[in-house]
Image (cartoon, rainbow, N blue to C red; front, side, top):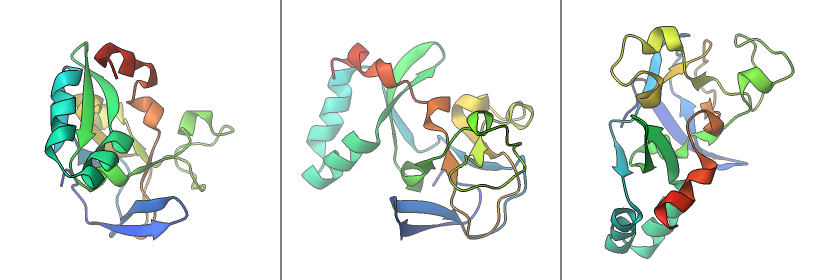
Length: 157
């Protein structure tokens, strides 16, 4: 998995979710895209969908997203438990909360530009703890930080 800390998958009201199995200090690299498949065109993405069982292809369709990397658009599919990380409200859109405060459904991982400067791919390929994350806490990203919702039309999908 592209995770750098122990995580566990559990069911909650959102379905399957990823939880910290150990404490994670602020600024730590939590996950990266080393197990993310990227498709530059819709035909290659459709080939993947046709090559796997129907149940798996339905999951892939649900969890795939369009992402920009090096000024190009790709259909991206995380092929590890990172695919189960749920979306949380952006820390910058959450009623003035600072990143150090805890609150249900507020992202606790994402882009930490200072930490990202030490890793190839920066914030495009790496996700960091935005505050200290306790053992047992759900990991949450703001999908709007990396997914381009209007990008699907570029792939004929």
